[in-house]
Image (cartoon, rainbow, N blue to C red):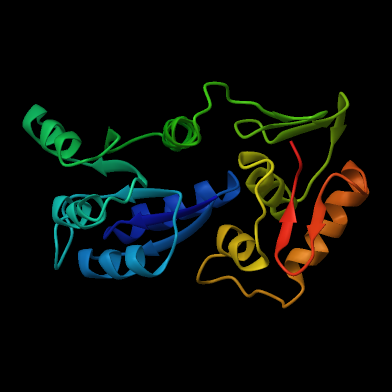
Length: 218
């Protein structure tokens, strides 16, 4: 799941990136409002983590751009501004949630998962497709009741498929979800991970759609 972090505090940004990557998220990090605008127009993100007190362009102004063009990206404001008026302004500007600094990374991750569930129309944490289930909170995957050990990339790839069962995803779409700006991507990386998932979940779990991409049937 690819996330955009907009945070100008270097220590906070580094800590959040490290923690969320360990939790299975793919993170792109920018440190000012204009860079955030550029990233949001160039990339497709599942969620925006947005500080308010940013250089060059403040967070509320950044938020107005995607909301003004009808972008429904999930937005979680993270800021030290704890006044009720600030929270109201952020939520009224289009944010989906508001978290006051300093915060616990486990709570941040849980709030992000809740927003992503809401975006995909799911009420339950565990995603179930046929006999395979995936728990984003615990990183547990079961196939026919049997625990399956996946690498971080394999887990992220399976999550992308199970979030949209029956939908064909191209290699480019999958690469966008799996890799951030700082990640090197081999030309056959997606195919390698799909091959590994098929070995662990069954050769017919992920289908090829010739010339288009891949899907997990419902």
